[in-house]
Structure formats: structure tokens, C-alpha cells
Image 1: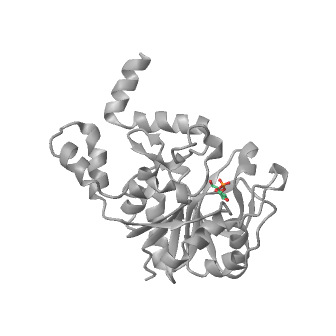
Image 2: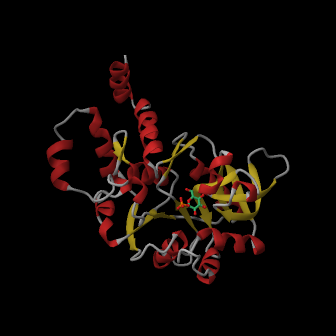
Image 3: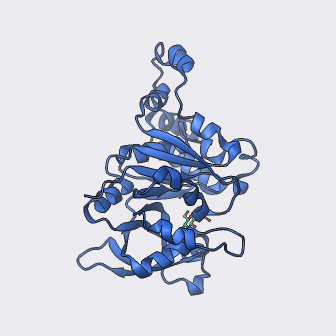
Length: 289
Ligand code: G1P
């Protein structure tokens, strides 16, 4: 049994595609229906059975970790005396059992570098990486992440969550080359990965969809990774060397993914998540009528 307890959330980015919304407010604290995006993400991790989240932020994004610290004054004033159903999200937050640690990435040197910044919290354990831009709408109790965790604990094999990109969008993501597993419609062996290829160079339309599980061996490859032309250390580079020596599985996404890193998708994600909330759905229906 390969027990996995920790998950990294790389959240040090400047949110430039969301400006001016994100000039002061971290994009992960923007609302998605009744809760900030980061709360949806941490709940997904907590419900999948992880024990600790390592939030990687830049020094200005301290409110992210603060969102998860208890505020006795708010709890005393609001939670005890109110019956407002919107407050259940706040109650859920106060009762969350997961430990939140904060690693600092001082410079925006890429996703691979953000993961390296959490190494002192991960030590020699396996871990998940959960990208907070990618919000997944799926079965809460049996999420993609929970399934990936179970598979890792049974096999010890690292894995990525995969979804299908439109041809015009392959240059936004890490695109994988896969071999299908026998007898399985939704599991693959990953043979390679290319970061943001031109459509004509893409080995498939399957992209890394923001949920990863790694055994500790990945650090060996991250430490060897050199900065790219933008000066960033990319996770994709480390993965493409990792697969030359280690098995890496890919699992198809179950549910729908919202890339909340741009304003258009963020707006649509808000509408879809709001429609799933009983109270907000009533309000929306009345408004659009
Ligand atoms: C990152 C990864 C990419 C992945 C994407 C998913 O890119 O480098 O491989 O497909 O997240 O959102 P970014 O969105 O940070 O440019």
C-alpha cells in the first residue's frame, strides 16, 4: 500500500489574464457561485481523503492561506445565530479538518519551480498536484482525484488526469502521447508529453488537465530541469524525462472541467456552478424569465 497524504496547490501566479480583477485580489479568491475558487479546490482535496495541502503562493498572496484559518469572531457572531442557508459554506470551512501549509515562491519561475518550493513540506512522500485554475464539476464523493489516489495507493504508479482539447486549443496545454491500456476505455500509458505544441505538432488532443499524482522520484527530474526560453522550470519537461524510466498512467476526466484562468470561461463556470446551487438557481431562473 502506497499511502499518499499531501497535495500541492501552485497558486503563486500573478493572474495577468484576469486583470484588473486580480490587481489586488488573488484570482484563487474570486467567487465561484457561493465560495472562492480556492475553497472548491481545497474541498475536492479534502473529500478525496488527503491530510495536508501545501499552498504555494508569492509573498503578496497571504490572504489565500488566511481564508482557511479560523476566525473566532466571525464564527461567534454569524454562525451561531443565523439560519441563512448561504452560511453553510462558511460552516463547512470552519469544520474542514485538512492541514494547510504555505510555501513561498518568491519569483514566478514556472510550475516545476513552484513544486520544488514545496519540497521541504513533502519530504520523501508521494504527493498530488492540483492546479487551482482548473475547476472540475463532477461527482463530489467519487471525484477524479479520489480515484487517482486510490489507483496510486494500489499500484504506486504516478498518473495524470486527461481531457480532450479542441484542435484550436492544444497550444494552451501539455499534450500527451499515449498507448491505450488493454480492456480499458479510460486508462492509458503515457509515453511522452509536449508543452503547448502547435496543432500540427501535437501527438494527440489529450491534455494534462490539472490533476497529477507523483511518487517522490519526480523530484529527481525536476531538480535536473533547466529553465526554458522564458526562464521558467516546467513540470512538463520533468515529466517527459520521467516517462523514459518510469511508468506513468493517464486517466480520462469524468465530469466537466472549467479553465477559470480567463474571464470568459470564468464567467461561464460561475453560471454553471450557480445553477447547481438550489438558492442561486431559483434567483437566476426568476431573473432570466
Ligand atoms: C499548465 C501546464 C500544462 C497543463 C495546464 C493545465 O500550463 O504546464 O501542461 O496542461 O497547466 O491547465 P499553464 O496553464 O500554467 O500555462
